[in-house]
Image (cartoon, rainbow, N blue to C red):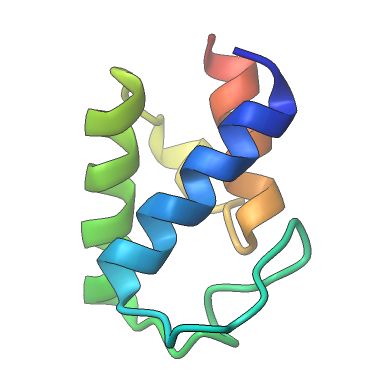
Length: 79
């Protein structure tokens, strides 16, 4: 899967998991903090991403994921 396809899928998971308002533009630079995600939301999001892509993130990687782009990069690196 190329980066663009992963980005599209991550955005879908973020929209579903965090109940992002319709019409909100999301991209690489969108931070989860800006979307109002708290620690529970982030845990739920990480679990959804792990399930979607069939992988497990190390704790070290999880601490670095602050934006949608960070999540995409982590998934690309894990493949």
